[in-house]
Image (cartoon, rainbow, N blue to C red; front, side, top):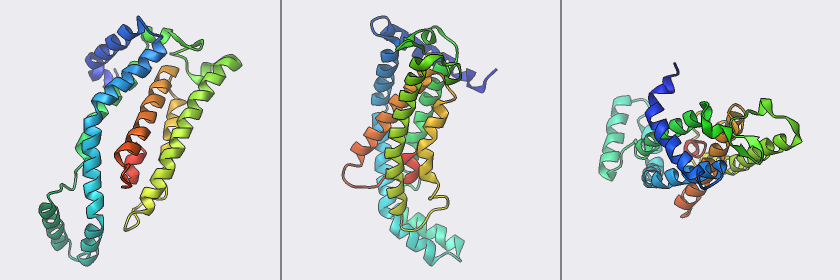
Length: 230
């Protein structure tokens, strides 16, 4: 039994919601609309995460200064950082919890679109939603997969550029910062392992995330590089 089986009650609810939409809309469009609806419901969490990330970014120069000043005195360093966060009324983990809260939703959607069910029997431009790229037959089916991957690659490139800018804006180089932006293209590789329905969900939620971040950081603030590749 998969460890994700614990999510099956929530998966059943998500399945019922998508199936209800699929009664009046093409199933592929129902998946897109359901994903958008849930991401819209989660938007307040994304706003909270952005506020936390901006607070940490604002304090980053001071944190770097304290780390440098007390690099040989770990206990004093911890005390100084704790005092800074207390004085500024900012948690060092600000923004992390809202991101973590969203993980169960993404797990439910992954489970829904990778476990055999009646939704996957429907098609997108003639391609079964449960089909993997390895089973594609003919140029038409390959074109659909190609368009999905191209869309994910385009979003990945946007996130890659933002992540590079965010990494360059850090006051001190972070370990692995040079490689982290390339994780933006991980969704393309992941999509190659899942059926069309999961790829469609992944493209929808990736476009939403990229657009949401552009809106939340429209004031010119840089999102942390790690957040841009999620």
